[in-house]
Length: 315
Image (tube, rainbow, N blue to C red; front, side, top):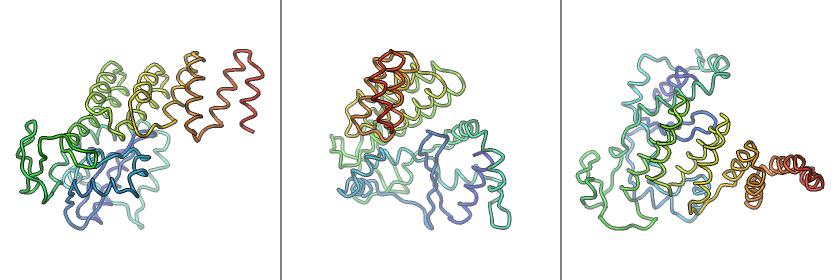
């Protein structure tokens, strides 16, 4: 969507909910954001949120959506109603009588990628610390790496200087994750500005900050998909190899799929076949495409019987 549509949607949403927050979600096929509306000022108890995320009935499902903890979710925060008021100043709202969005969308549909990058730069400029939203009655003041005295409307949010289990909320991790998300956004913006060196530098800094961040792994993969679509196959391979070589409780078969695509595009058929087979072993949902690509590789190598076997798997 265009910047104008983005503003109208935010303004319309904000006209219904007096307290609104904007959250960054993804950039796989254009910018995806979420708006959360409340009747009262949003307050989040990070410890209660962490307990809910790690509840047995939710934990596995959320990990499949690449959310492993409260720190990861909170690191995707962008801004609240104050930031949105500044962003949408003077903007009209979408109504049944004046459905502006319905008429703007068809005009802008073919410029989606350009608009997505512009809106991503807007999100980067709007991003604020999530700390003012956090509140907890069960936390004692502590001094951690200069993070003492962090307040949220008069209540101090901190954590004891000790190692914590994955079921505990760790404010240090949240700060690292928040910084890492900013780096991945910067990497995308540099990439689209044709500054590949700066883009790779931002990726590496973000990676060092939080390689175990499940949702950040998804954002890194989104970046690799963008690289692939732009013909930057070495960057696609570089990112996905880092992802598949990092210990994780959840490995997405699409990582191997895009590795296969990139290796195949570069003519490295041995590596492509290996990556595709990994994806198949992980029950990749796009098996038809993978078997077709394998058949194409075997056919180009003169391995006709193997090619036929792969093509038949698509029947």
